[in-house]
Image (tube, rainbow, N blue to C red; front, side, top):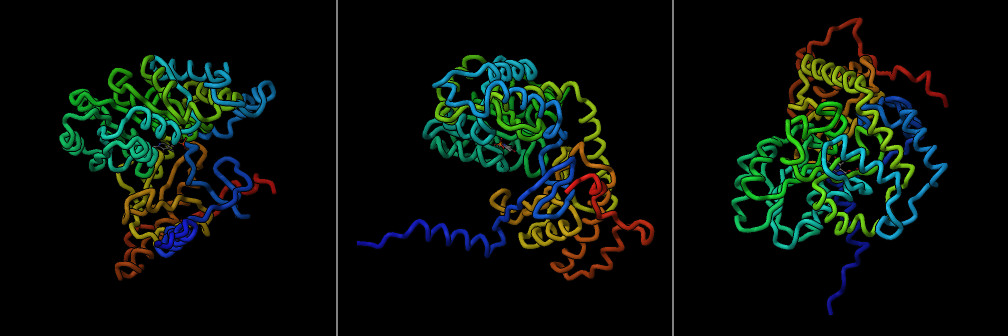
Length: 429
Ligand SMILES: *Cc1c(COP(=O)(O)O)cnc(C)c1O
């Protein structure tokens, strides 16, 4: 008889391995957030890591809607909608979403992750072909795996790559899944071309607009109208409420019959407690504000432009993104962690993104910009980056820091970066 490997030991080894590779995660305890500031582990930091792009998370009308509905309906939903019925607050949210996004019907799901794995697992069967961009969100990969589908992944945003991926399974039922705005790169998928390809291939197109919803398109209606497409070209659309909307949860939108089919088949809906009515009411209030609060998007566009301009002036390599997600590529895991730690010491919280969130060798800082940031905070972050990045690259390349530092064009005096948060005084204890 062979001796079993203890599963606990295997887990411990996997964690130790991650630690050796500089991939272990440390999660800070956040005590308070106010505007773009947060207190984490006793330090006040400017938050450049959250997806609250429009500052709606703490909007008073959203909070009031949550409180009011909780007073009427309690904290939880009590059961799955399948069992106890769909609450009127959820029905209203679904109706408003369908109207706002111009789709026949919406189905609310607990979260974006649950929506994607549930939909993939319901739509795909063993041996089906699932064509995906190489950089799609983990939930789309996990869902296709759960279904036992064959994954064919193509180079990031490459339509030719997608054509080749379809050619690997000409006779199989096929689904094309992509993020509209990629969560770690801020890049935009070529949706119009992918929609044409999907139609030509008789494949079902599923677009995840977690990061475009609320940000792009008229009134923040998202990446589909921004690409001049609609429900005909993109039959299934996933939008999340946890990012720009500042809430929590998600919905899948599509034609009446397909959404009814998903409502019947998605196991993460059927076997999971429904969205709390109060949360549905709050999400709905915030949805209404996407259209009315146009100033939030205008202000965000100004912040993005300011960041990109400043980064270019300091010769910081920030890639192609016009979205609030701005990656600064580092490559090495340990160097990414070091820079993030130094930024934290300077008062800035940025995401240090490493595998498995991104491919090996492409670790990066993920800077996410928000309506809530002040010009000074953005300038301060860029100045800190301009100071820290050359020193780090010197230790890799052997190039002296001084020569690179001088090439960044920073003026010598009277222009020192303001590394301190500007609103600490308002923060309270
Ligand atoms: C965040 C995200 C999800 C998951 O959404 P949650 O509501 O956070 O579970 C899915 N897809 C993409 C592209 C995301 O960025």
